[in-house]
Image (cartoon, rainbow over all chains, first blue to last red; front, side, top):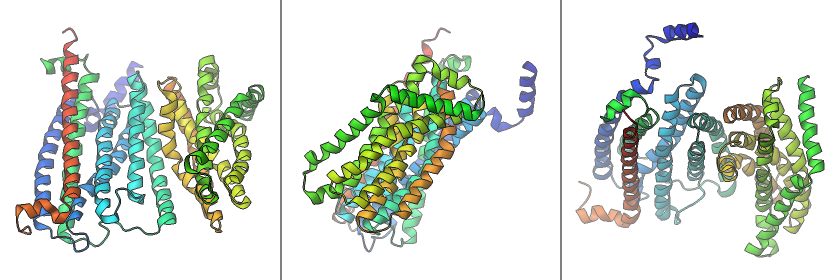
Length: 254
Length: 224
Length: 53
């Protein structure tokens, strides 16, 4: 037993990613990533909003209200991407048994849920002047709503176990089940949507001026950086919580 | 003991339980009956309106009735210790889970499916719609129980089981809901339900292939 | 400069409520998340202190 452990240690030595699977080793790295994330998020947001509000022209069809796109679309994309990232780290955790991977999933989930809420809220406020009502059962809005339910289920499940290890694995499994189902849900919602209301007017689907697209992409990277920074912050908090018995954490507090 | 023997033993045991405790299948049926009877009081009893909501009400009612039986899947066995026997069996756990879900699908699914055409009459749906709706419910109940088995297995030992099961399972039933209710609606508008029914069947097959594996993994996690 | 005045900027062509309602909600959501993040960190650090060194 001891020998195989030694062997596996030898085997993994020198592989940097394996070393950083240790919470203690990743803690300072996460701190650095977090700092870069905050810096990029603020810088890119200032640039993106400047271009979006002071350089991009008024939309010919929608007037000024289209400027919601600079936060609506990035938030919707991030809600999607974060769920995939969550499922990825959950799978990694289940396969390799690395604690840090589960923590990464837990750290991502609340930010992903917030992104889904922002996408829904801005979608509703954009929909009012565009469609004349705050909510239509548009395929993309509906899918985002279901994605939000999946986030809520994941977080509720993780919170319902007293045994952290069990909660880690259980919520990782449900994240994977969700990720397998997300494409099917998207397909079925699209199917249902075309069945019930034909092609709906979609804000932003008209060809966008390239300067608008530029601003939107910059804002997407700003959102991305923000989500990474927030997740890293949450990850570090979790490491402190779970490793609170370890010597290095106690020295950190001193 | 061979796998087939083990699976059929699990299957038979479920049916003996169904025969002995009628409430196991009668209660979900009663729930379904009452839920379907409530809606006319809420929306009014005009024929046109009932026909408009009938497919959705009956379909969602059947899904909810099936959802309520999920704790029956593993909770009791966890209490009386027979779950440990299942877990320690030499046979693949996924197959035993599948046998149990199959038994539950038939045991509680059959009464729901038989009640569906009856309620279709009360909602003024034509008989061809009623038949397709019953078929759609027949495809939806096993799908829900298969997906739900994963959540039920995870929550065997967790707090707040029943509501959390609903939160976890219901979003995943949206595809079968869309295709199943869509099939019946298609017939209502005089179109062919074939596409929807085949998509619904495809989703059932997909769940059939993956969810016993996921549910057995879930059982191992939660009883670890 | 595409805006004639600051008041035109805030009015957003008569759609100010929808545009600033969206951006305001984003701001509130981010601020709320940051406050929760800081609170959780503080609590975690305090819980470490409780252990005897």
